[in-house]
Amino acid sequence: MSLAYKNDTYNYNGEYEMGSLNKFARTERRLSAKKQALDDMKNEYDLIEQQTFRTYKENIQYMLLDQTSTIKTCREWLNMLSKNQDADGNKLDKRKKYKEKETYDWYIDYIKKLLDIEYMNDVKFIDFNFGQATNIQFEYKEHNWYLEIPHIKAIKLDEYRNYGGSVFKLALMHNDTEYSCSWSQFGSTYEEDELRDIMTQGIEKYCN
Image 1 (tube, one colour):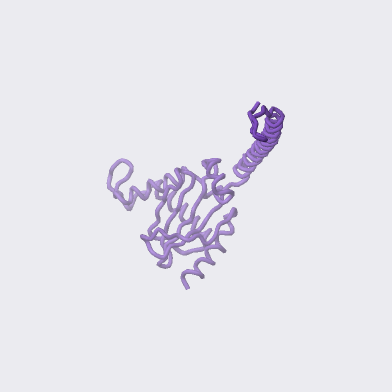
Image 2 (image 1 turned 30 degrees about the vertical axis):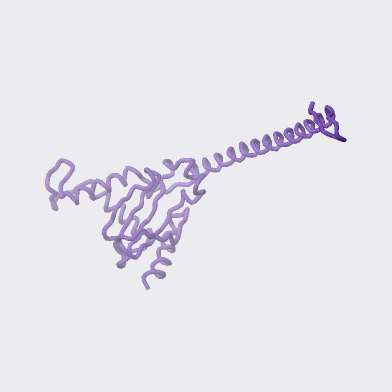
């Protein structure tokens, strides 16, 4: 109960206090109900999001591009070239066949066919986002490009939550200068066969 001042006298106004408390209680109940409804919607959203994420992972495959063991072997060959040494520390012999070189040549030839380009110079294999993708950077027609290959099995749910379905797409990027950080994405796709058309459009845009 509260002591209320009215008509120059003080009186206990229990009715006023109880009426206010009832209003507070009703408001709290409404707020609690809304919060529960929001929590239920959030839980439903999370379940649908996780289901969609699993659907992406189960249905998207880049059979020949998304091969972590092949990419690892390609990196090993580039490292051997930079040191001019084989895996045992011996000087590279031009007359000898190296499995690392054969794997590298096959993989690069496959990418050249996908992009419909004649060559790829200064090739680099760059790990992206803690192993969730690999960027294959190269020079073509005096411009710098890279093909981003997502590693479907390695992509984490948090990455999908931040960027949506784009994290599962193959992407092509362009950069005018070697040392610039300003890369521009000019196309992305879920289909390897579409890379040729995207690359053709990029060459027309940046090289002509």
